[in-house]
Length: 401
Image (cartoon, rainbow, N blue to C red; front, top):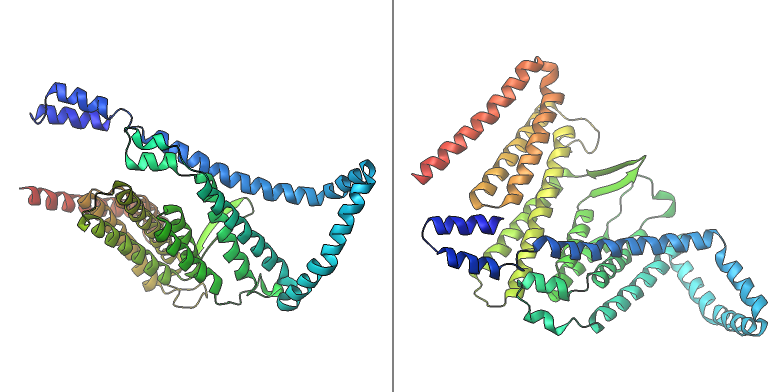
């Protein structure tokens, strides 16, 4: 629909003929199916996530139902000889390998040994799925299709193995990071230096640029968010997200947006003809932008309620501090909208608009409602927003003239 409208505009301005419009429309027939290729990609990714969850849940259910014990009894009843061989092998392995190794691990990590063992298992699975991903070759005829490089990459990429590999590798660093926490202090407020989260961040960023795979970059930013103090979870039928040090998260958000700007600048200055590499850089640029904006605005939202954490988590903040954070939130939201409009980037405009609406509603309910009549407070906010829009409109018209 967008291409058709654009081509009609070109015809109306005598840039192309009606015949050329039909030829271009026919040529772009397959290339326009962007949503179909997104569907393919996300079916593989979400399917892989549910496979991992299902496997973990199944193993848990098997252990809970003592299924293995019943299965082994069935083997004993059906074939006593085979069971005797299996039992002897298992006993030998347990006596000379498993038990000594476990004793060494337990001496090193104590009650946290389970995290180390599962980290080793996760790393082995990562190596296995990475190997399988390399062994499976895509169809050679894909390169001959009349498609964008991005669409060809979706058809050639094994998102199932990529997703499982990333999840397994991230599990390695998360489990190793649990080794730093004493079992009796998991639910306490004491802090530890997240060495393995930082190592995971560096590893995923490096792999993203070595393998040129956006998924690895996304996991790298996930570990960066963990290192900077963001947290999320599920409890009491509610999903929640928070920022323990909003000033640091704001800085992280700005850095990610800056990295996106640098990536885009390099993309414009680079005169390479490698369409696939350019497409990967565009993906990196997009990931930097939306993750940076997300972290930035979440931190600003937290600050608008509880301040800049200048009181070290005491839950109290000065009224002036709260007003400064709320005004800063509004200004950055408008600036994001303006930048998105000026550079024709929807993501900046959409984030700015969404959080501007959230913030104005928050200001109305938490700041102005008690101090002013609701009608006056609403009129004030409405007038400020309309005035801002008028100023931006005048700036635009003056620039065009």
